[in-house]
Image (cartoon, rainbow, N blue to C red):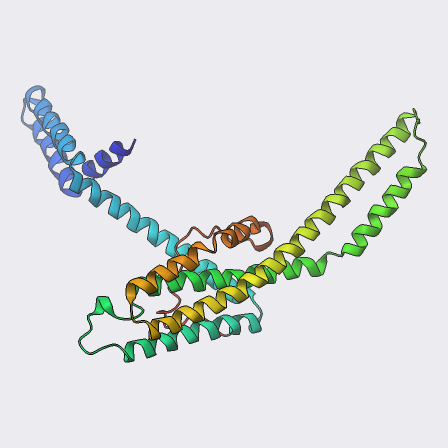
Length: 290
């Protein structure tokens, strides 16, 4: 199946299509299509086999496919970014903006403090580290949105009301005769039992949502502190490899957080965190006024 991808790319190359269609047309007009056309087909098969199996061509096809996927992912993440920024209340948007602004300021200071003659690849907060910080800021913004969505859910759901409904249903079931054989009474008992089970599940889900809300809140605070620490570290320790490894370490420590946010898609409506994060630090404008 993968090899077929390379064959397709080789065949759809515009120069190949031009040569193949031109050869086929010449064969048909030559008066000897029974001789010329098989030669054209044989040449085409040989070309596809040689080019499709060539490692450099396969690398080129893979790179183009990855580029297209990144472009699609970038478009998706940009749409998600705009959705989040328009949905969040002003105070949460300002909280994110404050953290981003601090990263921008630390980036500026780090560049001003770089040693004379330092190459672009060795400068503090180079492209690789900025990409890492983009991802951390992206997770932070989604944490803010997840926290906000959970808060909305918790405001609309009352644990006391659910508990009262459970007690009322248990009392209704308790008043029914235990050995009732009447079919109508059996249906009533079944309906009450099903409603009771649903209410108990709602209470379980509510308690879990409260736990997730607290966890997301703590992770948000922890990540904010980590991002600030990484920006300060870039100034105090102008070691690109070390900073990059620290960014990767922080990102790996957030695997459980990302898993939790992915599990809460029912509340947030956000897509998976696997998509490429948008540029947040280098973008000229990220936050728009509502």
